[in-house]
Image (tube, rainbow, N blue to C red):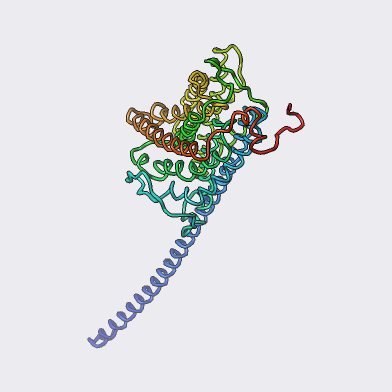
Length: 464
């Protein structure tokens, strides 16, 4: 074996080192290739995840927006319900007049909401911190950036949001129509409706739904027992007081019932309203979230059903007969009562609210009559009284029940009462002493169809 010289050893070591370096270089290159491939895969995965997330969000947004558009249509249909219910519970000679008012109010409500109402109700308050009473974002409606995508709202587009809220504004004004029916001047009613939907309703609504001071203190009103129904009810009370009773309703302290002319129409109207409440309360979830929406709809129907039962047996206990008009108002009373807390109540809670409202509406109708406050359709008892009861119930029953919550509800009810009644009374008063509020006695006796419209709803059947 030849001797290994130092030169040979160094040469061998250099070869080994070179081989090791080459090996390391190859390994580094392979690792780099692997890292590049991994990075490419991660980038591709992140991209695919982002696309998937965007696709899921867009799909959810589409489902939510479709439901909100359907809910908007349901609320719109409530105007047909109001029209048929009110015309059925009033006299045949005023049918065209009642139908006209219920046809023009949605138009006024939508347009005033577009001009200023929407931006008065949603003025951009600092939600959770604002103690403001009024704000204004500007005239008209303008599509914000991303307004037609889920960037605006995960539940709906800007346009859907506007239209849904406009339906609520018009609904609140329709409540007034029934209470002042058969003796108010048509043009005067239209003027009041314009001011009511343009200013009174949206400003009060902004206190809660626009993020104003009632929202900040923790007042709860899910879908409008107070903000829609009681606001309309307080306005109706102001109008009724200034108008006075219909001719012949009260004679020397004796109450003389003035029967409605078409109970079939009244029944159809009530069930149209009940159907509309699926959108009124169900849409107020502001998304198509299955659990909450289905819960709200069930509680709404439970309360409406118990309202009918409560009213039926209460009126039987009082008059020993089952008065259909009271049962219809009992249904509506239960629906109004649950509206403030439909998302917070359980089955027992909804049952209690419905029964209490159904019983109360009967007593309330009788009470208003004894006070000489003439309400042809029972709108004050249904929307005002039961709206108050439903709002206060949120502090007594359901998930939010507590003494502190009850105080917050009481503050909300009281503040809305002062604002809605006070503003409406001033507007009605101004109308009364300018263009006049009430039709003449002869016009009222012959019917507003003839004096205001020169047409009869039933020309071939009306007695001359």
